[in-house]
Image (cartoon, one colour):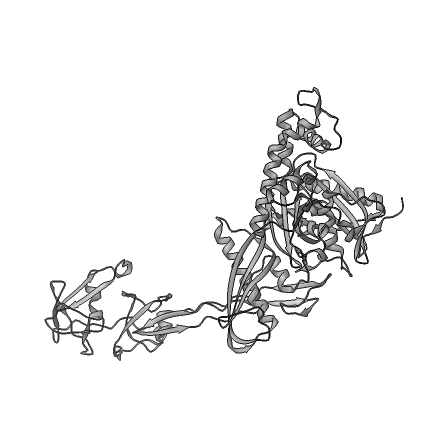
Length: 628
């Protein structure tokens, strides 16, 4: 056999990983359409997907490898890069808001707007994380800005306007990390590198409803085996996605129950409906040959099909608020006899405005050898179209710190977009100044600023880049997250300085000089005269061990004693060496209150009147120190 060719830069390989099967499409752009060279499909031997989510990575990888090898064998090409789509079932949408204060009034540029939007997206992700019991890595799929404000004034566009306070409200859509990671893991198991990723509802719309038709209000409904994905467009763009958990498998299970057949046989019976009015032959689980009239099967599936139509209609109306101008049904489930009419009935539409997808495929794709007008090809063709049309250079592979970046391609991508899509936050890109420390010292509020952040390192192809830099296929990104600045920190000694001598209370409790201050702490001081050092000879070798005492020396002296009453008991205070006065703070140690473990505030009274810590105590004063 001749040596196989290498997958060249414009050859597109797409895989649709479905609940029931894996479909591969190979093609290349020709003008403004994609020429499909080959299509291959293989079904899972057993359930490896649950409602569109990969359950058995090894089995899915093996089946993807089988599809890939069949295509390689027929085309003589070694396929290495693949475009895929994630199921819409796990999509989570969340609103987020962010405010950016500029140091002074100035003209707003694109870089500042990008930082503002990144902050709002990060706020949306944080809000989403707070809604759940466990924190999960989330991957950004896309976002739209609902509203800008500049200095509290609503704006549609901030660029070039002058102001100081910018705000943005966004609606962001995320996929849980495990959905993305399992898809990448399955492709690695198949020996393939993911070159681009989109969402299944977006991909199906790209095939069934080309861009030139999206000025109309249209709905695209992709009915798979495990989920039904829905996308809606109007005024030229996709305006929303949703999904229903009712899908083709529920119809299959109804056939299983009605005719006692296994799942695989029920699938065959379902596909045979509508092909002819003759009897459908099959074998039940008892090993008996069955001949089932098509009309009996149609009757057996009415209940689940009615629930499916009802779910589709409800989801469309929840996003669109009204019936759209037209509905396209795609996926294998769209072939169910009578479903088109039921959907029209639920939406109160003319059934001529509900169509089976496929007629518009020719606007975007064509083939010389493959019949493409099948509704079940909407998603695989859409993935290939999404990846291929307009792609003029190498396959859209971008590396981030040496690894393939996870991308959801939906137009031009900036460096900021790619970082957000790969789990980085606004703080990682911009960094945060350390938290300030605010304390009150003797009635005066002091604020100590935190350290500034260390900026992020942003390089594209070894050159410095900005967050707004547009990323192209083949680019290599080097990113080192910004490092947040350390928060402000002070001990009592650092707050008061080396010259301070006296006593300190922090939040009504005695404190030592090495006490670490916290946010909002209240510090009270009583400055005192340091004791006069004695002129005694001290050996020179002992000098390093001599340190000042933390509290004033109070020698016992019979002269100048202070006689008072403390908490109803007489107390004699010795005279101070400096002949200085006593203050209420000096009496705390005689009160028998455990100031190390206070759970209530302290009340100080002298002669029945509440006083402060620095009140000077006089002879015969009646002092009360108690817990409130």
